[in-house]
Length: 265
Image 1 (cartoon, rainbow, N blue to C red):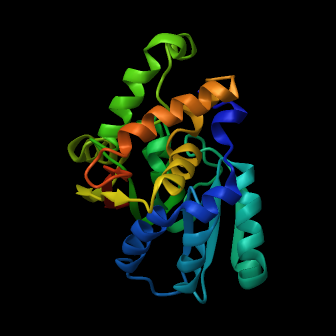
Image 2 (image 1 turned 180 degrees about the vertical axis):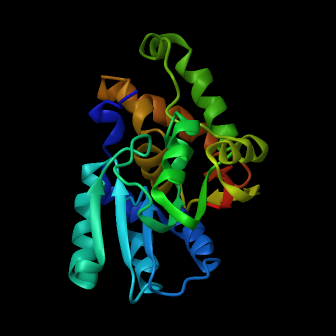
């Protein structure tokens, strides 16, 4: 099912500025890559290009195809990457459920992106198809129990009073798999040497303002678009902030990451 423009587009300049947690997690995934330096790699869900740049640093004789569904993200990534890396990076708008590649890449790298794809089975089959024999997949995304505390509050608030009408039959915009489910999907797609695991990644923000900007721009951007009135949106966020201020530590998010490693035979 194709996403509406409002669901696939991001405020990319804001994301580029506030995505410190995603960047820190992604750097850990990058650090585990054993690159020769001449590979052709797909950055699946490149976002604003912060991690694409670090991936390119490890591929001095290679090439990266930076792919994202959001054209806003690609525009920001292009501005961030083009002058520094030139023809070593290509930027393409495409859906991970329908990739325009076949046996093109030596590897696929992805962080903080795969959980936004609702048809996980199809996505993994597409990633498998785009890899050459012997190719690898290294990814990290949201996993089971991700943001459970915040999202529990959001569901309760969204089902109450003046907000309920905006969230009738609302399908959440992500899939948070457990390690076992992800492993089955990968093997069904044809991958071998499959390794999956969950990792806690609690994240605390430096006060209310930082928390509000991050949650609004990253976590709840699709939810908030359901509320047409700006004052009601602000009221919705304010209630979540009030609860977050009482957490220990205050203004923290209970992130869980799903780590994925697999190969093509």
